[in-house]
Length: 395
Image 1 (spheres, rainbow, N blue to C red):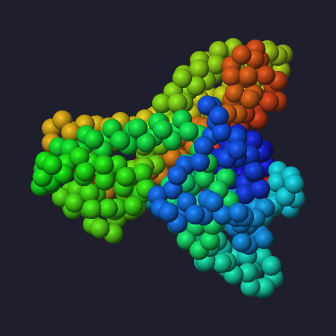
Image 2 (tube, rainbow, N blue to C red):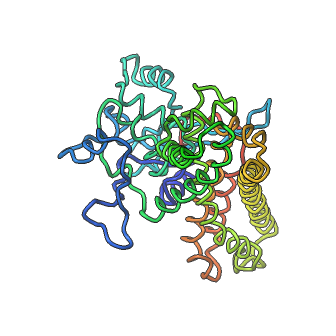
């Protein structure tokens, strides 16, 4: 990842890039009808944490308090499967991280080793709290506050952190919970086939809804998962993935019109410089090639996300309408992989969408400056054209 890509990431959202120093979060006293609100946690202990008079920052380590965390996308040469790796950048200048710095993968054990080597052999152990946060970052496709909130209990296993980290808009919370509630209610047939008494079906469905929302198994999900042959050790991971997929389902719907508008703009004359005929042949070819690559990458990414979501909805429909659990069982078994790939695609589009709106005033600007168009297209290609990346520094 080069500096321009990092700069675009930092100013275009929190999907694939996270800055612990970014305090652009809503506060409890800013609530109104259009406001952001605190998402309630699932236990009294977490509620007590929220009410604490003072809360520590997200990280203990001084090396991470002002670091930049970001996702990189690669392709497994053997399987062709896309995957994300999570890195953290120790910026040379924390006030201007665009200047770059060394970066490392955040696997806790490897990170301790890399930091020790970087600081000339001086041991730099991580606290247990920091390890928990890094593990969440590593297994979560995006850094959305919603996804961090979904794992708040694990993040705060050793100590509380500032509550602002877990704020999401009230509308997003309501919409995603509604998606989960609908799916849970439709599981009545599955609950019945699992031997649940009719007078306990509603109770079981509510238990399933709560389990997905809290990403923690309970009696209701254990009963259903057992019927589907899912090992107990995989239940919480699948529930987190299920909640994440529900969130990304909501985001795909939210992005749909923006995606259509962006494609229309990319196919119009406004997506090339106004002086395109006056530039040299080489420059003209370059900008057209960049635009072609960007369009292809954007379409492939959106189609991949749509295909995963369609597979999910088809499998669920087969379960509910035909009482055939096999397709949904298979989807749940692969839920963590689907979760990663779906989040990767949705997060990438979120950044591109934000950058495009900023560049074109949501498509209303006639023709951006040539240099800005080229930077935008290169950003899209760098972010979404999936390939192996082995860089360790922001150049």
